[in-house]
Length: 182
Image 1 (cartoon, rainbow, N blue to C red):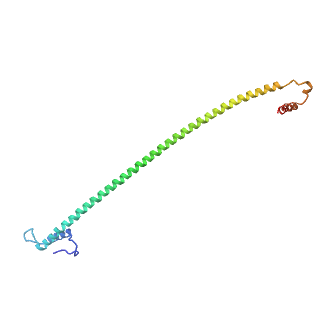
Image 2 (image 1 turned 30 degrees about the vertical axis):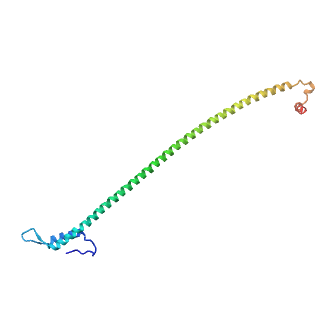
Image 3 (image 1 turned 90 degrees about the vertical axis):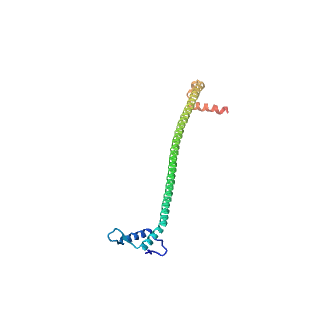
């Protein structure tokens, strides 16, 4: 008794073994014994088909196990690649962060140095201007003293009749002297 699923389909070993189990369970019991009677030919054919199907199924099972191992290995390699890429990216991010931090520190140091230099230059410029103004003040003071001395020397005792003239004329006369020298 051969199972007929599909004309070209290989027999399913599990189904054949289940059929054998069914034959054994439905077999007629021998009187006064635990033994049963089975049709040797039918049982043998089913057993032969099951045995013939085992190598193919074992081959398929081994192939599936190998395929499973290959898939797991590819998944492990992919996971390792992803982890390595993530590690490299994290290192780059840390490096960038470190580079940014270092750049900020450097920029802050440069700005502080520039501010110190600017303050020093400003103080030096103020001191320079103050010294020049002090020197100019001394020169102006001397010049003013010389002007006073010069005016004192130029003041002539005017005769009594000239004293009555208005002083504006004497100033005009003073300036006229400058025009006469030209």
